[in-house]
Length: 318
Image (cartoon, rainbow, N blue to C red):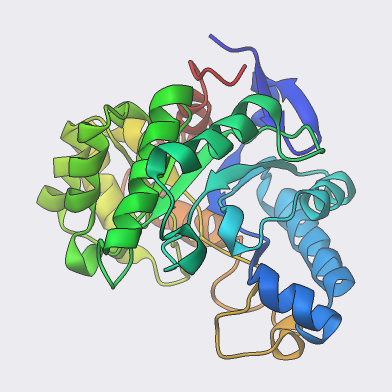
């Protein structure tokens, strides 16, 4: 069993990760537009300051020690930025690598095996010249379904998972039940399904549907916890009653800034941490509901402490 975990500031003892929000973001943005328009697109220093304040506050208010930043390579992942934010906030940040569901022209002619080698290299040797090793992988399918290019990106990350045994967060669009298509690919590439997180499971309250993935060994990411989360709490309570407490993760899928949304950074800046979608909902909304429904603190701690750590054990990234 591994004794240390990689963060953006280096290795820490596994016991130090403490309370974990298992899927958050600092930025989800276009590298190309940021490079092209600079601070006219969004102001980097202001984003960093806003992130530091938000993480400091959730550490003080809720006792959060660690966030897993689920930002893949093609959503604006920025390691030096994450390092500064972690250093100033005192919150551990764990890095991800992978591909989002965007239909990227530059990937069209590449083979999954070729692409996978670059991601495996990041996991083994660290990102570029930073030396920071990702602890999580990311893939994604959304409302356009498994297109030929999306299939290629899923196959790429399936190969990376097989070779590294790192946890694979699978972004899904549950209205189309996309996990079923993803899992066919994962099984074909011999992915360790006990390392797969079916992302955005909080978008569904269909117990039978969710248990399909649990029975295969997957984790469920209840990672879009909003202020109005009573139905999520009821679903979680039912899953715990049915014996699945070792397979649940909690978080918000929160970000300081997402440039695909219909607002500018100037409009977003004043609302960071103040909207109904913020980093405190798990602790201030979901957990009180769970207590009212009879869920114990020990069961809640499994989702926030034990289960994230369990996912990061037994990888080849040591």
